[in-house]
Length: 76
Image 1 (cartoon, rainbow, N blue to C red):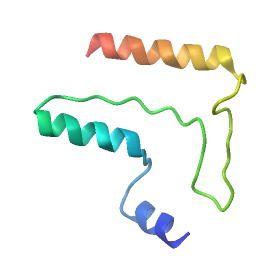
Image 2 (cartoon, rainbow, N blue to C red; image 1 turned 45 degrees about the vertical axis):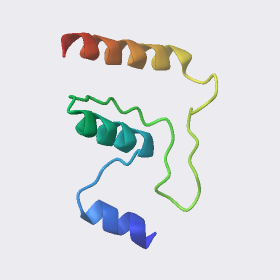
Image 3 (cartoon, one colour; image 1 turned 135 degrees about the vertical axis):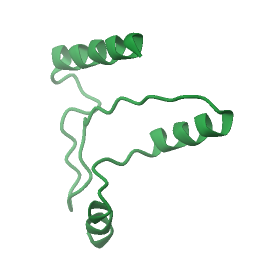
């Protein structure tokens, strides 16, 4: 929990290892990168809050989020 508190005090609101790897690769290649975050689960507590990650819950909502992400990508 201390590490989580320390990260929050640094102003961080979201951590994603895959996105940081993509950002590093884009920086190395000199490319722009835009990332879209969807909080499907939560790891900032003692117990993992799985929410709707990896199941059939809220499929309509997930489809809408995917469409919003795609629309943003097209506009950028």
